[in-house]
Length: 184
Image (cartoon, rainbow, N blue to C red):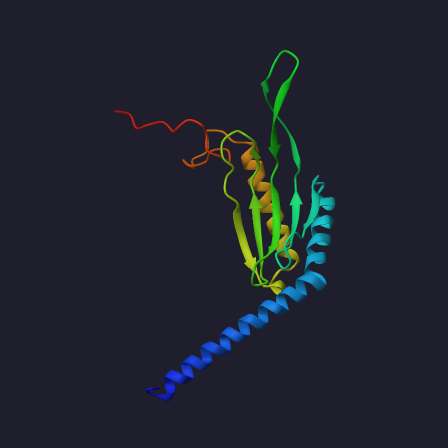
């Protein structure tokens, strides 16, 4: 059945690697529960206080081993509204963006930026994956970089104009009208 021992050796090496990956998943989940989740929350709380960023830190734990720590900029009135009648206005809510640290299925941690968007005004821009880390890789300096990138991205969204060179930039969502067509 087996043609030679090298085939069996290669298969056995792959099986051992698979078992190691499965063991790592359990180890990463344990580290998340015992310390990393709390470390992320505490670090983000400390950083936002130090720089005066008005944000909330939320713990999301609806699904076991897929928990997340979310730095949220909250919601606000967008300043736009639909006039229902002379006395009633239906305001469009603006979600101001969030920075998410979430455990993946394999116990690693994905860092994601959710861009601001205005409800009922086009489609939200897809989340931006910043990086994926093993728990031991996610250290202090990374949090500062992530927060800096997040603040840059939401500031760019808020300061949208047509002077930017990037042709696909559209305030974080698809507008209800198309881009200019080429001249004839």
